[in-house]
Length: 218
Ligand code: DC
Image (cartoon, rainbow, N blue to C red; front, side, top):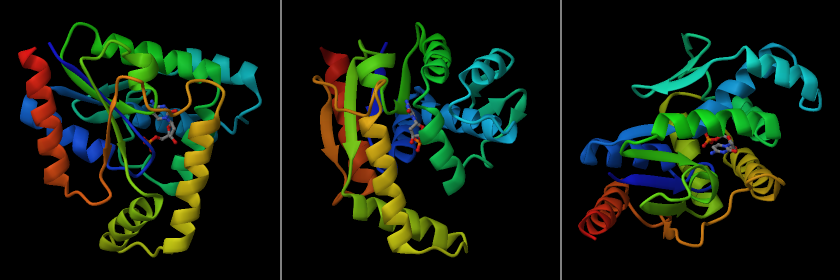
């Protein structure tokens, strides 16, 4: 059994890389950011403010979230596509600071991963969710490189975008994710740092696959 934890800032390519490594190694891929996005979507739809902790607890009790077959399912509906906006990125980063939200999602994440080989990506996987993961990677890239990748992605979809605005948003989200009180984004002591600023997707995938092979041999 191998569990691979991939953490790092937004836009570092975690989901793309984790999906490809998962396919190559036959591991189930779990995108924990998608879960925080789904909660952001629901609380925003219900017009619940981040400081209304009682309503958040109540709503969370009657909310079901699952990540299965690469899809994020919120209360029975596939919301995989509609959670990918800049607005939901911001909301996910804000609502993910709330202890009630984190404890519910971390419980779900540990249950999904229990007893099987997985590759899970997020912000606190190596430091909190799967502290005993066999391989931990801290995937990062220069903030301008991440902004440019996001900008190209939007442009390729025909969406109008401004590079400087995207760069500012990425830096704001980094700050929020790294400075929140509970389980902030930080490199685990036993994680390997991979800076992908000058690497291609193939290079990153092959590097992680080789590391996983070494772990499996030990
Ligand atoms: O990885 P992402 O961009 O889809 O994540 C969206 C937000 O969710 C991110 O800004 C912080 C939060 N998040 C978190 O707090 N813990 C995780 N394990 C994954 C995401």
